[in-house]
Length: 246
Image 1 (cartoon, one colour):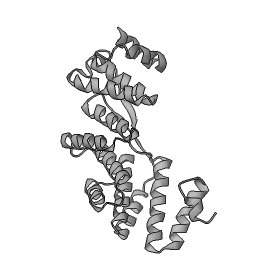
Image 2 (cartoon, rainbow, N blue to C red; image 1 turned 120 degrees about the vertical axis):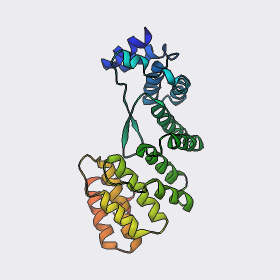
Image 3 (cartoon, helix red, strand yellow; image 1 turned 30 degrees about the vertical axis):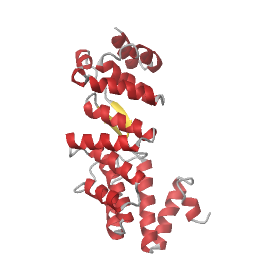
C-alpha cells in the first residue's frame, strides 16, 4: 500500500509526500529504487546508498510493481557536469546511481569498481564508458595509463548523440594530456559539427577544450577567437576571462 501511495503521489508531482510513503516500502525492490532516487535528488547520499543497495539485493524483483501498474520509472541521472542520461529500473540503473553517489562522497575507488563491473556486464554501453572516462580524467588527469584507457574507451565512437559527444570531449582531453594535439583538435572539431540536441554546457566545454589545444599548439589567434566567443556567451566560464587578460 505504501508503494502504491508513493507511486501515485509521484505521478501527481508531489515528491515530498511520495518520499514519505516510499520510505515505508523499501523492503520492496521497486520502493527502494524510487526512494533511492528521491533521496539522491535531495542530497541525502547515505540514505540513497542504503536504498539502492536494498534494491540491488532484491534486483530480481525490480520492476514487478512498475509493470503491474504501467509505470516506466525511468529517471534522469547526471553523468557528467555537461550531460545527463535516462536510466531504467534495472541493475544498470542502480549501479550508475551508486557511481554518482560514490563520486559525490569522494569514494572514487568504489565508483571505479562499480563502473568496471558495469563494463563487464555491458561492454558497449556508452553511458558507462562516459562515466568511467570522466572519473579517470578527474582522478588521474596527468597519468598516461589513465589517459590511454580513456582513448581506448572512446575507440570507434562517432558523434551520434549528446552522450557520444561528451565521450569525445574526454577523449580529446586525454589526447591533449598525451601530447597528441592534432588528434585532439580533430576530435573536437568533429564533436562541434553537430549542435542540435547538444546542451550549452557541453558545447561550451568542447570549445574551451579546443581553445586549450590551440593554445598548446601555439595557434594563439585561434585560441583567442574561441575564448572570446565563450566569454561573449558565458563571461564567468572557467578561467576564460583570465586567459583573455580581462
